[in-house]
Image 1 (cartoon, helix red, strand yellow):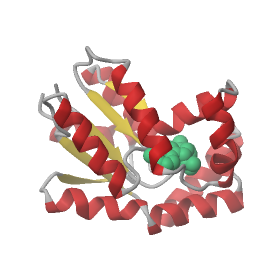
Image 2 (cartoon, helix red, strand yellow; image 1 turned 60 degrees about the vertical axis):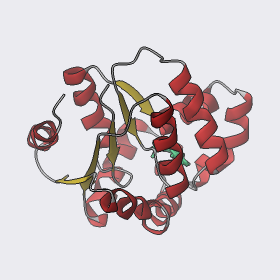
Image 3 (cartoon, helix red, strand yellow; image 1 turned 30 degrees about the vertical axis):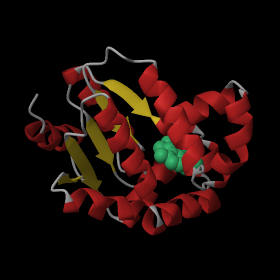
Length: 188
Ligand code: AMP
């Protein structure tokens, strides 16, 4: 089992690179953002609970996010490997993920951080807004998401760095070249 965390600010290209990684390696893709959007779209009890938070651009509380992630892991007992996209976003989430992996006799083998400047992220999301119409891509919500990233999520990087598990990849440039740099790191 090989497990990967793909890390980066909103608009860093996590979704795009995830698709390519799944195709190449057959990972089970776990995107907490996609899962939350599914729950809100389908108006589930969890969706009703998190809708306002997501639309504001804030982070969903750890206990809610961690419980949803655990449920998703339990649904995939035969996975050959997981690709975590948009999770963990806080240190308690990173600790919970390590614990879950340990319980399965596994671990997070690679943490790949896409390095993208704030200016680039803003330009990309402005572009995405014209095609995807995500409620949380609106200007003031975007500011909140970027603030959440730079005040909370960024602290996850030293957590992994201290353990020697952090790999940083330049996230600006050609999509296939970025993918090649990621693929170079991952040895199954
Ligand atoms: P994303 O598509 O990954 O940018 O996620 C969209 C929104 O879902 C975020 O702005 C948060 O409100 C929520 N979300 C996704 N993943 C997490 C997480 N790991 N922890 C807390 N909130 C999350």
